[in-house]
Length: 290
Image 1: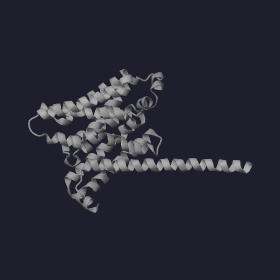
Image 2: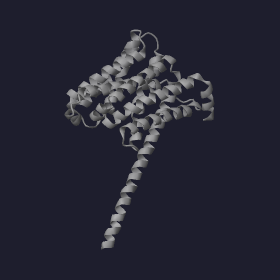
Image 3: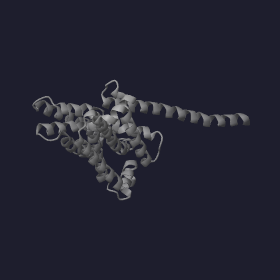
C-alpha cells in the first residue's frame, strides 16, 4: 500500500486515474441514489449497454467515441423512458431488446472499422489508468451539468422518484422530469465508462448508493454518503490493484461488491437482533403476569 502512495505522488498517470475515480464518484453518488430509490436498475442497464452502438458508429465515421457514447446514451434514455411509459406490459422484453440491439450495432461497426480498435475495447472493460487530460475535462463538465440540473430540480425529482401520482396531483410534469432523470442517468453512464467500462458500469452506479441506503434515510445524505464511499472505493481499488498489477476497474467493482455484501449481511443480522430484543421483554412480562 505504501508503494502505491509513493508512486501516486510521483506518477502523473496515477494522479489522473485517481481524479477520474473521484469525478466518476460524484456522478454515481448523486444519480445512483435516484436509480436505487426509484428501482430502475434494469432501465439504467439498458441505457449503459446501448452506448456501445454510438461509440462504434462514432469511431467508424471518425468522431470521438465519447461524443458517440453521450449521443447514444441520451437517445437510449429517451427511447427506454418512452417504452416504460407507453408499453409497461412488455417493458422488460422491449428494454432487453434495445439493450441487445445497442450492443450488436456497436460490434458490427467495430468489425467494419479498419484495424483493431483498442480504444473501444478499453471503453468496454475500463481504462482508468489511461484516462487522458481531455477526458478529465469532459468528465468534469458532465459532473457540473449533473449537479446543476439535479440541484435546480431536486424537489421535482424527489416527488417523481417517491410518488409519481402525488407529483401529478401537485401539477408537476411527471413525464418531462422522468425523461430528464433518465437523460441524467445516461450522462452518468458516460462518466463511469472511463473508470470501469460498459461491462461493469451498472455495479459502480448502484452499489455505493445501495450501501448508503443501509444507513441513512434522507436522500441528500444518501447522495453524500454514496459519493464519499465511491471516492474511497476508487482510491482503495487503485491501491489494491497497483502492487499485483491487476486491472483497476474490476478491482474497484469487486471491492464495492464485497462492501455491499458485508453491509447487507451485517445490517440484516442487526435488524434480527433488535427484533428479538423487542420480543423478549414482552415475553418476560407475559410470563410474569401468568
